[in-house]
Image (cartoon, rainbow, N blue to C red; front, top):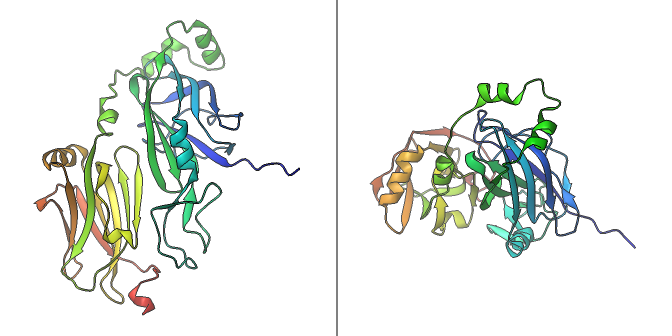
Length: 332
């Protein structure tokens, strides 16, 4: 009998920044298939929602976490023991998200399709990616956020709370046995008193949608990539980029979008946002928001408005580009 192929996935452990590092001591990630996956070796790294490091592929379908870790900057051992919502996991495992156009795939794209595992964007025929990475984000005071990554798309699964391990003498012996520094010395060098409020606040969401507009009649929108402060990422493509639905979204940190207004007139626009200013604007916007990116007719600049009112941005940039899209003016 042919052995069933177990699906693969990767695991990342991220920190908000390099000052807020944790190190797993014991860990296992239970799977539906019955085996256990594991965390990467070493400490957390990178930025919120992305460790920036690869690791040996794991196998199965993750449905929880049982992790004991040491927060180096808090001088505290924590235990995270949680079951992920299995129905939600199974639903996401069926999905494959569109990341971008593929040269040989001519059907209209959808945000995601139920294609199951083993879909990996990168070939000329396949614009979709299945679940690829389980990402942990360790914030202060035992707060942990978990995301599911599908290629470049990342979706928050949930926020969980670790418990402080009060009797940690045996863990201390094991953890510091092979280190060149004592616990007291590490505490003197690293200890910080930090609240998790900043990363909890990043999880705030508002009902809004992005809209790309121009008085130039030749406008064609092709692609938008959004990175949010809460660690999520989203991609909008044709045809739905012209009719993006309103849904609960976090505050954007950065976005870029690609458009054309004629042959040799393809551009990428980028915008960067400050969380406090953008969050305040969303708070005041009411129950529904249209975040409009209004491009000048000559493509020289764009402005950002929320429900017709100027929206605060840190900076905007525009530069010409030459990419291949199915509906490009270059192909006409």
